[in-house]
Image 1 (tube, helix red, strand yellow):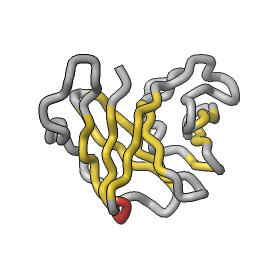
Image 2: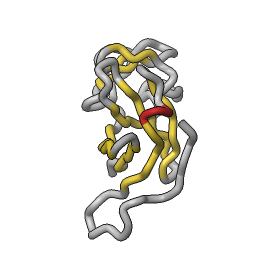
Image 3: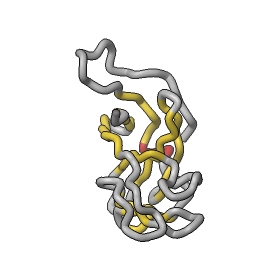
Image 4: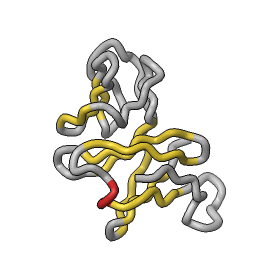
Length: 121
């Protein structure tokens, strides 16, 4: 999945709504695992879990400044490759130490094979 920062693809948005970005297709994601995209200057991990659901979370581990997309996916969690903290892909909360702070979770929408992500504020 190539890093993209093509801008929002929803046109003009009413005040208070978030921008939605086309980040790639399902074929570009690993069967289980993640890829990094850059959206509006923010690194986001787009991750397919072992059940096939697609998630989007901030890519940087809240404990150390490393990419979460490079970690192992188990069920609907992702493990930081450096120190082993696991994060819930559904809510971003850490499930094991040393991380104690959650990572932001973004809304994913699938349309056909296209993956769209709306960035959390």
